[in-house]
Image (cartoon, rainbow, N blue to C red; front, top):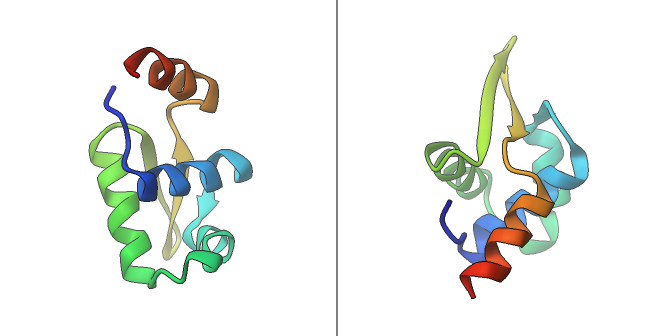
Amino acid sequence: MKRLPDTELEVMKALWATGPDTPRSVLEDRLAPFGWAANTINTYLSRLAEKGFVAVRRADKSNLYTPLVTREEYLSFDSRAV
């Protein structure tokens, strides 16, 4: 496991709050205060999937995102890494 940049951590926080099989539109709503474009959020989600933090499942015409690492697992790792 690697330490996440602050931006990707914010995406993970939104995913942890919403739970499994979260559509991107819900994530975009939760992340709206940051003012990120949809493409930016998509880039962060792709990076998180590549790193093994997020699973992506295609459903109809949209992707659903599920966190593979729990908040507790990450915080435990992060506290040891510091």
